[in-house]
Amino acid sequence: MSQFVVPISSVSRNDIENVGKYAGELGELHQIGIPIPDGFIITSSSLQQFLAENNLRPESSEKQFVHASFPQKVIRKIVRAYGRLSGILKDAIVVVTSSSPFSSLNNISYEVKGDANLILRVKSIWEYECGKKPFEDNISIVVQKKIESKKTGIIFTQDPHSPDETVVHIKHKSMVSHYAVSKGNLDIIFRGHLSKAKISHKISDNEAIALASIGKKLEEYFRYPQEVKFAIDKNKIYVLETKSLIRSIKKPIFYNNFPEFNHKPKINHRVFLKGISSFPGIATGQVKVVRVFLKGISSFPGIATGQVKVVPNLKDLKSPLPGEIIVTSIISTDSFPIIKKIGGIIAENVPLSGNDRVLYSKIVARPLVFSVKNATKILHNGNIVTVDGGKGEIYKGGV
Image (tube, rainbow, N blue to C red; front, side, top):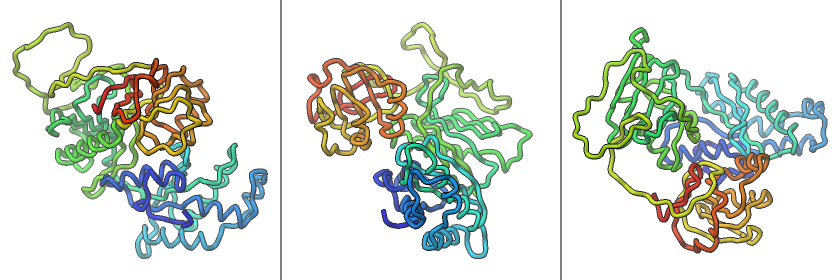
């Protein structure tokens, strides 16, 4: 990507190598119709221009980076993009975030106002990122308009503290409002508001339903439960970030945990089947029996459905198709750059070590199941399977 500055709306996950994982994921959200704050990307081409003009190398000192001059043609592009974002005679507050091709977990982020301050902050991010080992010259920077709102919070597309998968929970950052919305028909099954909070700070029923719909769409797209940060400004919803939900079953979200509420679901029913209670919660839905086809050890969470490609030795893998499920005997770190666009991996060998696992999460980050006995013999090219990296299970067909 030779352009110095591009709109977020123009990129997708296919551009991760050029704009980084964080920027690519934001572009992907825009592509599927998820509302995100306006912004632009200062691509890695700008950093490479900065390094080239100042003759900077991996061995260059910190002092050389500090005294290096910012390329004028890059400055012009950034100032023009910032002006369009701010509006005429205005200086918008923007959030500036680094974006690496390998991870979106350890990005650094700042808030700035004014084009001069933006240029200074971009340079400081470059200095910081280039000071890391190994030296990286493919860092991009995302610039987004800050959404200043009293209505901010998190959408949990599943309750992180219980096995109930049928309800979307929406929590205001300050617990001003809490909603539980049925994932099936988007009916509100619980609403709670702090009576002392201002009405303008409370989430409305219509907003809660719209938020639940966004959460449901994101979970279906990523095929894994999501934790979604949002903000509501002037009756418009913005998604600020989404990531895989880390489930920790410690205590369920009960209605009586919320200090003040005005609705509890009332259920009149007859018992059809009876068992022993093990974990509380209520769920309604169509019964679907899913049988585990193969079982292994969970190594990286996520759910992926795709066509099987059996490659006993990953060194023989030339150009995998995006979304393919790779079945192999052994996976090692030297194969990570080749497999980073696939759907998921089923491996026969033992799990990766701690350091290799961290590297996998940064470069590949796809559902991964290890220690699946005879996987390369049982599965064949063209089979459709679903890999659940969180449970270490493989199912026939889509789930």
